[in-house]
Amino acid sequence: MQKKYPFYIQATTVLLGLTLFVLALVTLREVLVPLSLSLVLAILLNPLVNRFEKWHLSKIWAIVVSLLLSFILLSLIGYFFTKQIASFSDQAPVLKQQLAKSSNAFQNMLSREMHISRQQQHSVIQRAQGNVEPMATHAVGTVIGSIAMIFLLPVYTFLFLFYKNLILNFLYDVFDNKKSAAVTEVLVETKSAIQSYMVGLLLEALLVAVLNSTALLILGVKYAILIGVLGALLNMIPYIGGIVAIAMPMIMALITKGGYEVQLGILGSYAVIQFIDNHFFVPYIVSSKVRINALMSIVIVFLGGMAWGVSGMFLSIPFIGILKIVFDRVDELKPWGKLLGDQVPTRHKGQLWYRRIKKPGAVSEKIVGDKQP
Image 1: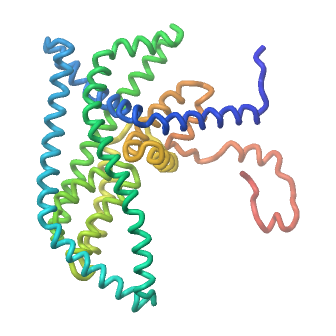
Image 2 (image 1 turned 60 degrees about the vertical axis):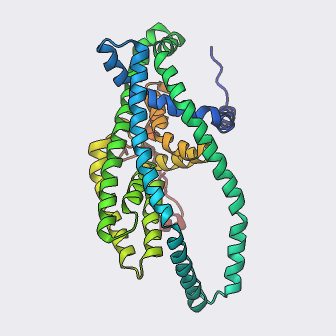
Image 3 (image 1 turned 90 degrees about the horizontal axis):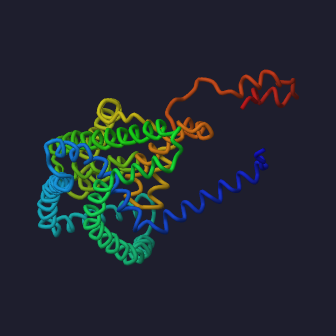
């Protein structure tokens, strides 16, 4: 007979396991981040590899051609950003002068309206500048890590695709033969969910980039295409990316434009674009088979950012979607799957029990109102 441990022992064990798991994720981030990105890329390229194999290409050549096509696409995107950034660098001195004028006007406004002296403002700026060097060091380290990841990603992706059958057989061998059907279902849904989510996300980013750039061009914001595309890429990071995407053109307009008409135009146009994105693009283009509710999405995105930085924020939603697929098929974990999902019940089970145990209370309890959970 299986011994049932008290709740506090079970809760302590779960918390200890979660703590060790998160600690392992943070400690091994340099290894796990490129592996995770490569796994997602391998899942995306798998249909293309299968198509080339049907066209009688060997497995190695099918993988190599698929990687080359993805490399060409990424190179074209990189070339576009390089040209735009080079144009931005040519205008950097002019923008620096305009930024100095805007900063001086802002400081005068603070002195006049908020009664914050120039000396107090200067001390705040000095303290902020003291943090620039550590941030610059961290940025350099991030760039070096990104360069190393660029070389690791194709290698890991090639190996994931080449050893796909070996990895899948391992997953089947780990579980009992009676659960093979459940394992197949989880693997198929996981692959389908990630592929549909990522492809839909890329199409959504393309449409949002077109809308952002068009709106900024109409408003006369400098570097409209660059800022619009960057905003669309940031929008791929759930919830947080959209805020940063709006801040970039607002800051550029503040530096290069006088008054607040352009800023209000940017705010209004981006609000309309976000409405279109949330009510049309996401439901009809992204439309992932695994939907995570907003509360859990925000929490997971923040946790992913704390653990793995921008890569963690980007990977958090697909990975939590995989967990939900697994949770929904394990009886003991189904409540966690429901907690992650976006199906909100109209009533909770505690209401039925509350009617049975409800007793008349004191006057103060009656004033407070219903105490049901």
